[in-house]
Length: 270
Image (cartoon, rainbow, N blue to C red; front, side):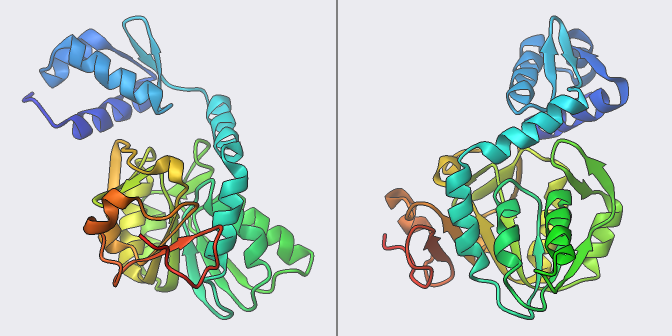
């Protein structure tokens, strides 16, 4: 096999690991026609992203209970900042809107604020978002519709993905779509969840307005899977203003930047 790009090779390593539960450095190096050191770097990166666990001579799959713990851990990290970002993002939602929300530890924080809106239709692939809204609906505090995308479920992200989710999404249109991410810069918005890439790309094309929720710790952070750039985003909701070094790379006539700690109807000043 010829030498492949880093991203494609790592995706294939994860796919192989998913089917075989364990992979070996030497065998992978031979299969992908690269050095063992290159494979070790791949496994180091994937281990850091919590997509596998390195062992002597190879790697094994993470256990589901560990993945569930990681999901809870992400929710606790920067939780106060994420709540402020979610509140500011929720104020963009108007009564009678049809919106989509992709799962993420920041977008999940929107749930209590969305319950205050009237006659919403909310489409999501996130189990926590759907269950949270159902809880408010049961209490009589939310009168909207909740549509959960079908598909394969993941305990790592507590969300659905795959062909069925993508097919459902292709049949729908939205006033606004809300995303979170693992890292972002003007030319790159990335995630550690491969299964969310296609859903994100479809959603961007199906929504009138695309809103990115991201705290400042994710600025200039690049993860393995890139799904778009700020050129396809209409609004960024963050806890800090636009970095000075980004000003010349962003068209502020096309992109609204909301600082969550400030009044929401103002763009941040560069």
